[in-house]
Length: 107
Ligand code: SF4
Ligand code: SF4
Image (cartoon, rainbow, N blue to C red):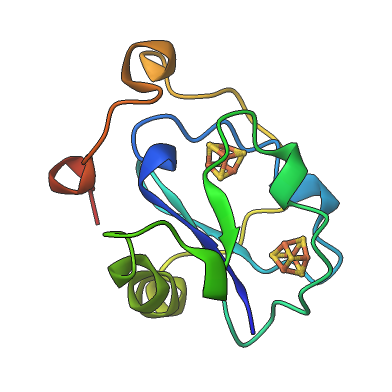
């Protein structure tokens, strides 16, 4: 199994999650993070760190967001690893909790 970053992270990217990961499984894109399923060891540490509940176990991804499982695997092959917290995106608060942000995803 793996953990998966889902829709709510898009355009927020608070990055609180990355520092707790013992295997450096997080990868960073312009306005979203993903988890590399080949690195994730299912330790569960990152899930409660996300202030906006964007991280789920693969088997528990919310209905309609199943595509994020494959998307995390795909984008983690291209994006660099991130291990240190940084400031959230400037308009993160404005986008927090808005449903269906996939069309805002920058690759
Ligand atoms: S803490 Fe949540 S919003 Fe922030 S980068 Fe991680 S998954 Fe995205
Ligand atoms: S569950 Fe653990 S290993 Fe997997 S991404 Fe989260 S912190 Fe990293």
